[in-house]
Image (cartoon, helix red, strand yellow):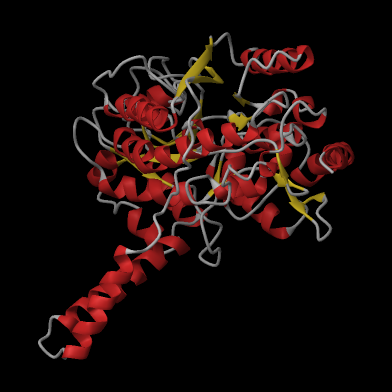
Length: 492
């Protein structure tokens, strides 16, 4: 939101300056200054400096999944497909290949299942490193499934490669900063692979239904800094209606409307989006648990009060658009006002009959500066095996590909993701820009340290019986602290 406001302020200043110049009151000295400024603009340094290199047809090999949970993760195509996003990826690759004289080679690993494929990818890299065969120049991995790929030295420190300009705007700098420990970064995120934005937790809402209820779309609340958990609760509670049904149990022939079609793994994202993290850095760079405080407990209570099944506020049932009672199916068929989902769901719902809009997860209250959008610990992040023989070459290729993705691929993704039936949704595209700037990720979650605690908190919010949240945290605290120390020590 800060960046957005800064952009608007800059625009206002420019408009004011142009109005003054065009008012007829300017002098010859004004004209001279304007011409001088124009001259400075024409000689300004370009945004990106392309190195003068020739890689003589080198085949640059990137390990990636062929598919994953309907998320757009494609890194190349053999030919133009006629789809805008596919063609943007294809044209990006051919342009950079031509510039540096190399071949971009995506090595796709087939999807074999949620609980197996991540381990398979990690095993491929480990086997290659141990054999010294240098099979991959880069690999997209979910290190959560075996953090030994990081802690046992299989990967390069990406910050040690100056050709990777990780602090420039074409990289996901928020995420990279959070994944950097002791000035080392083993995994990075950028629009080169769109799965990070595809796997961030967001809200979609049914615009058609909201209009029918006579409610204002929440977009302006977001712009004004007033999209909070309390406002979200008002919308959710007002949307739930039995419509003649005997109860809130879902049936295909029923008429009840739920406030939220909920994914059972999402509630924790709304606690964290309210200004909380599970862990935080101490002054000396170590990690400590950061959930034993009033803001976390208050957010937990607010989210728990919203995500209740007894009054129709939420219906939890994971599943696709074709699974009866599945959260995507419920929302797709106009049976809920909201859906808690990952961004990728927007692609799956593009043929939905009703119009939908995009929102960030709510803030705790209006005092919270910015929205926080949680990225899944399952995201496939860029890594480089330690067997990489030419880190400078790899750095140049990956950095340029990332820059071109930022300039051409991500804008196309924005339009494709949030366009239904050939119609643009400019409000949602604006929200996507805000969300992209608010991405956050938990390093200790990515490393698998806080996973059990996250699952336990989700279970409490979704109504499963168990101890209170404070007792649950206490049960996990000792192991989390020990595991955080082990990870930290491995990256010294």
